[in-house]
Length: 152
Length: 129
Image (cartoon, rainbow over all chains, first blue to last red; front, top):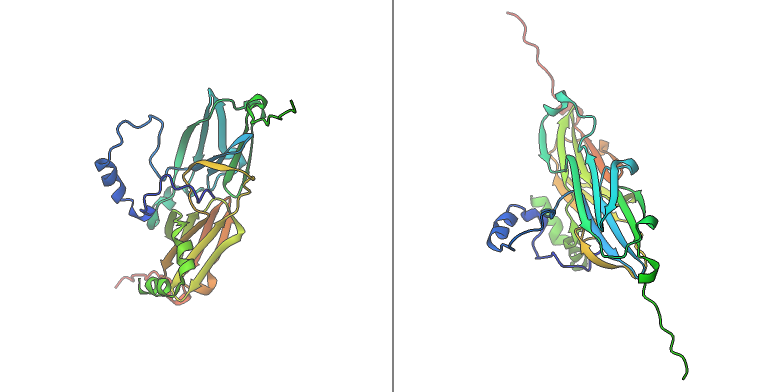
């Protein structure tokens, strides 16, 4: 999905995570947006658009239908939720030997600004296999329109 | 480590290209009750798209993201930049590879890798002299 989009691809795999902070320090981009998040934040988000809608794909493994709160206000789409990496874990479990803990654990919030002209009333969301698809239709009057050429 | 290298060498070029476009799923690994547990985040992967394989002592986890994308969709922002996940681990000899169990739930893969019977830990009671 979106494999053709290489905007963030600098040829360095995610295996080089130790390298990135150092790299970021050297190539400082100035002030970051206050709501921007570092790479690899949970959940991953992809956004695409068609002629008549904007589609947001939220890759939130482990979340069921009721675990993600989606809201839109002033053209900002906000995603909130909680993901327990290992649900049902109690105090005694925390003492068991753990070799890796890479998965996100806890509460999260992510915000995306949307383009103008979204018809929030007709927005819909679906989920399957840990992916939430949010369909945000554009307002009718903003859809591209074909103009017929009439004979003179 | 040798196992991984050998596998890479065998792969033909297209396969290697595909591999470079795979994402590395984050994992939690812990040990409990004579088994190792591997939990991997692979959102978008269905049962049909999941492939867990053990070859010798190499465990490969692969998954294909299956999402219906409408015609004419252009990406404007993408954090997930591949259609696949892939990750490999080498197993130690005490794992009973025939008894590995896998479960997929909301895009989270749970693997249980039990230890072989004779490698299970036994508590040794200390008797009073």
